[in-house]
Image 1: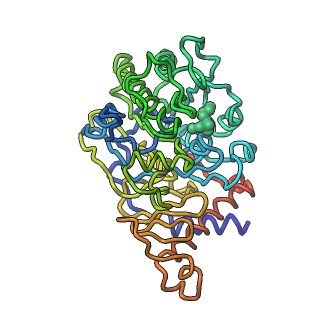
Image 2 (image 1 turned 90 degrees about the vertical axis):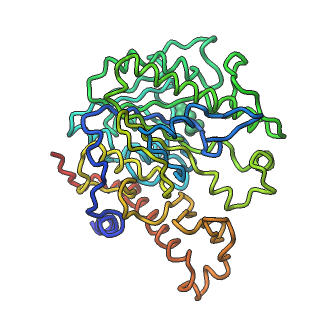
Image 3 (image 1 turned 135 degrees about the vertical axis):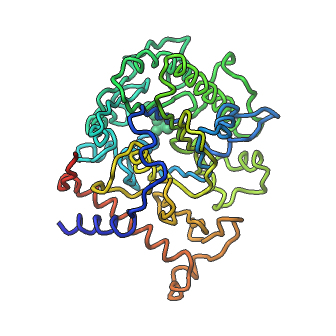
Length: 418
Ligand code: GP9
Ligand code: MN
């Protein structure tokens, strides 16, 4: 119907183009190991607390010639938190502005990544040591066409190997490897870590660095659990090598969403050595790490272009050598030149190549200076505004994504695989 036509036309004209990425097919036939890293924000990367490096492994990974690291990559989640990030990555659609789309629209039809890669005979599995119905994952994973979900019942969980939300990340990766080794190849596997989750509890024996010292225990305890997750991922790399899985895989690491909310801004400003956390800073704090590690590739680098979770699906599909001409999505392949010039956050805020727009104010992205305030954005002089046209485009894009979801419109699309 008409709404679907609107979406298709928008995507054809605004989102997609014919440019083929230099990395198209680079991971063809390889396994994909996707690590959803709980609550990690980019401000901890290449930083120290009490004179100690917070993420030594990830910092080294950035310098590795096999790694692409995106330093201006934003999470785009809302109330659905981890599940929103999963939804964005699987579908390259926006989550909803209220509630969790995993719950509210779990009956829809989607055209998710695990389903698409079946055309290249990929087997797909999720590893997460929590109850399978949490975030309605059991239903959504089926809808997304994952072949298997290794939930908490696949793991041995007891008092000594758990903390906070459950199984400790190091034990989780250790116990996962036997399952991974037995998957049909090529596989797409998603690992969702848990230890670095609010309220950031950790046993002394697992604490390699000391907490920070501020008025926020949340921020204080965040650093040791981030470090623990960093170590657990390092150990996972070693396990993959020992299992002979490393060479034939690409490893993606993505922060799912922020871990430290604006409630802790006083402590955060102390840590960042800033007088205050402005709305501009608050947006910049929504950056999460994004790594694509391709063993043996040798051409990795740090990429500064703005990027977001919405871009992950087309990027990965193209790396796997899958054409997306018939797919519907709102992101761009991160390895093409000609991309959208903005990353839309779910509340209508955005980051563009030049601007950061939030709380009705348009900031210079380069230095955080105020360029325009609400008064000259929303008036008749809007035609002269630099942020207003992008703001309107972002609103349109979000509403088209919403239409797809509210109307369950993907059920009318013939994606015509193979
Ligand atoms: C729960 C875990 C954390 O299974 O993924 O969820 P969150 O609270 O971050 O959305
Ligand atoms: Mn999470």
